[in-house]
Length: 469
Image 1: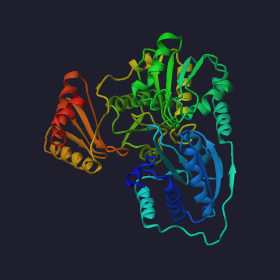
Image 2 (image 1 turned 90 degrees about the vertical axis):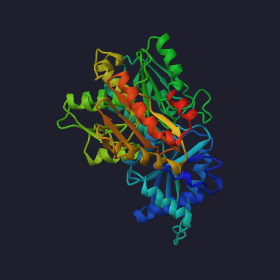
Image 3 (image 1 turned 180 degrees about the vertical axis):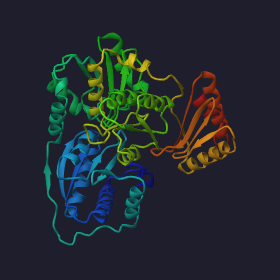
């Protein structure tokens, strides 16, 4: 195994060169050793998988390793990550492993890890890495082999969704949904029938780990072209794209606008503040200032957080927030739901808002504060250089009198003409940048500030490829 598979929020890498199938059993034993250190009475876990071609063999090896330790396994089979999370809140089993590489290309796979209903991440993943490295594994001294049972969690999840959105049954939900050949194809075709939606079109519902139509990452506009064509040529009001394991959902408006997560979070918040007092909403550091402004306008408390779905989840609970989200379209509802990221549930909440309103999604977005944003830039660099680049940029802006710095995750520097962010990616060997202003000129000025700051680390060709100059 390559050690770069031990990432901030999960274990993930290229199968063959980074995740070596022959070593998956040792990896599973390392995870369970950590589980048993933290929870000595652990006796049973849930295991689920996405639709990647190597997921079945990885699942088989994990189950073999887990049962060897005397731990029982409930195999919930092919399912979205949200269905796996759902199982931890709706059965007596609160821990488990989900085999998935989310939105990554087809040659990737990995494991999302949950203990006591919470994601295992950060230092906990590093502890698992230490166990794997040292080979100091838990020994099953009882000789007992764990049992394996199967459970149809998909139908349980579907029935829960259909009953909790009973008010949307037989409504005119005019939507096109792109499953991207990912796990959403396990859920949406059945859900649409259960809900009696006659005007919903489903694209690429067949689960296929080769992703023959496009990569299952709806935040990339090139992966939403089929949805856009349907919106332009057919009488649909909204498009929905889901990622490979369905924990993210990105909508597209009738006009073909791919809605950023921070803008959708503002729309979700408007409904929630009408139902509760003292509403806190958590969002990541990449999000627009327009979101914070809108939350204050509607009487909600904005809570800014470092990026990363596990950190956002933690901050949701710490702040007793009703809602959280990221620019990357992870949404966490702690209102009428369980506080984990679920793209399918998020789509239903959006359908609910659209059904209750006489406005289109385009019209709702027009009411939000206006800002000029850059996309999120990701520039590849070595893992070793990531923190060095961020520290260098932090040092440059700390010497400026006109910059206010936020350093909870990289550095976000705010000047009177706009703000910029540079942070180390937690999921790949890259730095991430984003810029915002009230004007086009201000945006160019912020971008130039940051490009000049990172210039010592990149050749002019790479900078031109990313920033056009």
